Amino acid sequence: MPKTGKKTGHENPISWRDADVISHGDGMARCPWCGLDPLYVAYHDEEWGRPERCSRALFEKLVLDGFQAGLSWITILRKREAFRAAFAGFRPEQIARFDERQFSALMQNEGIVRNRAKIEGAAASARAWLALEEQRSFSAYLWDFVDGRPIVNHPRRTSDIPARTALSERIAKDLKARGFKFCGPTIVYAFMQAVGMVDDHLVGCCRHGGDR
Image (tube, rainbow, N blue to C red; front, side, top):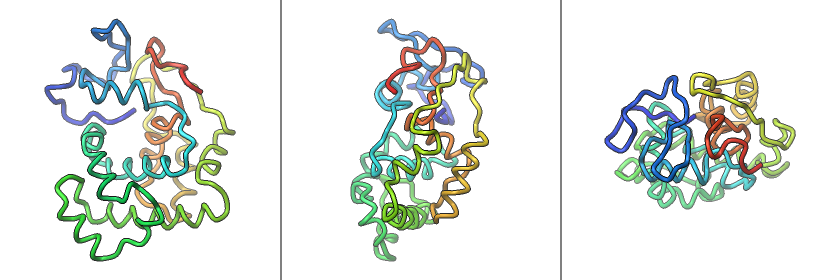
């Protein structure tokens, strides 16, 4: 479940720590964390929890989840196009070659999260991605952890959803051993939810048990 961080004027003002689905003006019930922000609602409906099997898209999401650490996901979502422009469309082949010149330029880019360790970590993760792709696709590698099928949970309230699991700990450990950065168990579980390896839409949400 994405972190919402501090509430903004676009978000429903209730706390999401122990909440049920919320009804929207279109008559649809949704997970409460997307609030009322149209961008967040679209992300909830069209992306979060839908199985993603493109290796490059999976790389992008993992890197962005790493940048999100300590921030709210909506912050990253609002900056996503700027990130894509700054990080060469998240093409690992190009990011892996980033050097001091690119790192310095990125640290001056107000459109992204300017964190030197995370920027350098993205380049390290790109190199790890390329090394893994020489053996097998990044997509196949990740989906094998769930036997190729999403894990469908049935949480009724946001408090039923864990921040990390034994499986996310195992995946995080393996990713780190391969050279990926900013991929701890909590980040990995959020990533698994986002790319549909886990379906954690609340029971009653219009997207629960959706595309698999």
